Each structure stands twice: as structure tokens, then as C-alpha cells.
Image (cartoon, rainbow, N blue to C red):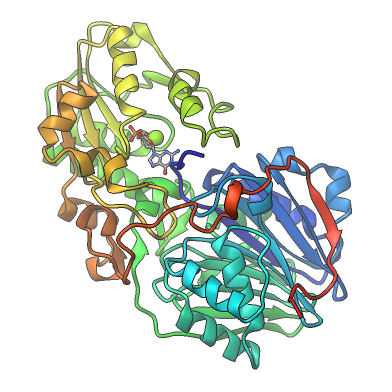
Length: 485
Ligand code: 5GP
Ligand code: MG
């Protein structure tokens, strides 16, 4: 299986005084679909049992009315998955469910753990059996098998885990949520109808009519029960928020760090216009992620913004995408240029990032074929030279075009643009407005906020033979105990 290009996952949790919250979880996940399209899952609990259903594909492909009715209870968690650790089969879909002693626990994870393999072998030595290849199951088992109160368990877990994790956890009695000490991935708390919601991004709160309360702090755990929300700091914070969330991942209508993403991206575009001006007739953005930046470039430069590329929004975000062959074909399936707008024009083409440079060259070629006279590529993220170990699947250094080629000029030739300009690191920091020492910039500086292995194999946690790729869904109330005697 080829490595994929995308970060892993959106997470959601809801606790209300009312029954029937699976539907709320469904709409929460629906709003977070951009964070993962490979599989989706919801676990619910009613005080006595946990129920879970997971399936391959989009949230709307996985769940129908009957499924939601079969997920009873007043609390639920949900997950959208895009694989970074583990392959893309159903066995790796989340929430992952484990049984320990007479407790069961469901967990959804966004991020990536660096030392999952070591933790896993330690647990296996203690007789714990694993049923998936994900680091999420390693997290769940580490948490579930730790001794003591929940506070002690979480502290124990956070002392052991190295990496990024925004988590939602459901037991039969409570909903918990946590952010790793770096706070590398987003997670926020909202209020809904006498209850509570947690979500990767605020856009999920908006769609279900919840009000934003606050972001979880790095290293913070919250427990939501009938008595309300309880919070504790399970580990010392060491902030390193992923700056790529601002540039690409988060939805433009989400608020992170008190800032609405869309205007942040406009500022990125404006910064780029100041750093890399060019004589041109029109500015276009690669939709949808670079639209705001293109508008910003246009406003700053005075060159009109035009939608020269139309994106088919119903293509390309399905669970078949991780296949490299489909990804290559995907460019044509995904974008269509507007020749009348492009004919004879000098075009500034704004995009948020160049990663492997599989998408960019065919997009440039497509514009030329549609009549563009010149194509000046402008990128709102610095050259990505180092892999991400925290949940974004940038692959190895050798898969990254800026990891392979040292000079911007070489990359310009590779993508066949008339000019190429990347935003500067300082320009990026300035436009995003987050302190450098509280951000993770590793993918373009090579400076990781926590120790990382030299090379991590995405499939290292897979069972021999790659596991069994079953295309069916699981719907069950889970019995206890998954330990060997
Ligand atoms: P490339 O030319 O590197 O193959 O692709 C660059 C394009 O991929 C840009 O349009 C950018 O918005 C998009 N992109 C950046 N990061 C990711 C990612 O993690 N997943 C996906 N699917 N696209 C990404
Ligand atoms: Mg894009």
C-alpha cells in the first residue's frame, strides 16, 4: 500500500442530558469531513453499554438512519480517519474499542505517536493482545491498563507517549478528551443544549448550534459526566502547535488560537504578494484550500482575482484516494480550467503548499493548455523538507520535492512554472500571528519539538501479511476483556 498524503483525522464528542446523540455526532463528523475521508465511526454509550459502528468512506456513506438508531445513549464520540499510521483497511477504522477488566473504552485519535512500537511491545510482554495496526489502539491500551484513578492513568499515559494526540475517549459512564503536551493538533470545547461538545475544529460547533467555550490546553484532560466538566493538567505543557493547520488543514471558517482561519490565509496571500511581486493579468487560487490566499494576493497586488479553475467537489475525497495511481488521475478528475478566462493571460497561481509535487505540475500544465501565457506559482508555505511525525503524511524526505531538490530554481523547472515564490518563514509566522517558539515548524526547519526516530515506517505496526481487508461494517456491544490469561 502506498503512503498517503493527508493528515489523520477529525474527532468529535458529545454529552447531553438527552438520548439519541449519535445524530449529533454524525453532523459533527460531517462538518469535520475535510480532516479525513477514508473511514468514519461513531461510538455511543448509555450508562450501561458501549456501541460502535465504523465503515469505509465518507460519513454519509457509512451511516444511514437505521445505523444511527442502533447507536443509543446520551453520549457519543466520532472519528474521521485518514491513515498516517497503519494501512487504510476497515480494521484500522476508529473509534477503536477495547475491553479491560470489566470496563470497555472507545477512543478516537487525531495525530501520530512516535514511540508506539516500543509501547506496544511493552504491553504485549505484559500479555495484552492487539487487534489492529494503529497507534490509537496502543494509546487506548496504555490508558486502560494503567493503574489508579483517571487522573493517574492520564498522567501515566502522557509520561509514556511521545507524539501528537488530540483524543476523545468514551466509557460507559463518561466522555473524556485530551490534548498532548505540545497541543500539536487542535481540539475545542463547546456547550450545547445543557450538555457539552468537543471537536477538532470550531466549524463543527457552528453547524450543530453549539457555542464555543474554549480550546483545550496542551497537556489538559477534561472529563465530562452528569456533574459537568472537570479539568486537570496531566502533563507539563510544551506548546508546539502545527502551523500547517492554519495554512491548509483547518476549514477556513474555523477559529484556532482566537483567529478565524480565512483572514489568516488572506494575510498569507498578501504577504506573498509583498515578498514575490510579479507583472501579471489575473490571480487564481488552486481551489478550495488556496482561495483565501489568492484573494489576499489579489487585494495586495491589485491584480484581479478570477476563478480560473473549477473544482469538482464530489471527486477525489473518497477512500480510494490513497492509491497512487488514482491520485495521479485525480488531478484531471478534480480540476477543470476555464479557457476563456485564461486565454493569453499572465497568471499568478496561488497554492498553499507543494508537498510531493504530484499535483502541481499537472495543474500548471492544465492552465497552459487552456491558454495561459505565463504561470507564476506562489506558495503560502515554505519548502517542505522534512517528514512530519505528528499526523501529516508527508512521507519521507525523498518523497518531498523540496527534500530531494535543494534549489527553488530546480523545483520551478520541475513544476514547469515561469516563476516560483515561496513565502518566507518570518513572513509565515508574521501572517499567522503565533509565536515561533510555541509552534511546530519541523517540516521546513527539521527542528522537531520532541525526539523523533530517524525514519518511521508507516506500516511498522501492521500484522504480518498486511492484515485482512474486509469491506464490512461492525456494529456491536462489546464484551469485556481482551487480555490473554
Ligand atoms: P503536490 O503538488 O505536492 O502533489 O500537491 C500540492 C497540493 O496538495 C496543494 O494543492 C495542497 O493544497 C495539497 N495538499 C497539501 N497537503 C496536503 C495533504 O496533506 N493532503 C492532500 N490531499 N492535499 C494536500
Ligand atoms: Mg490544494
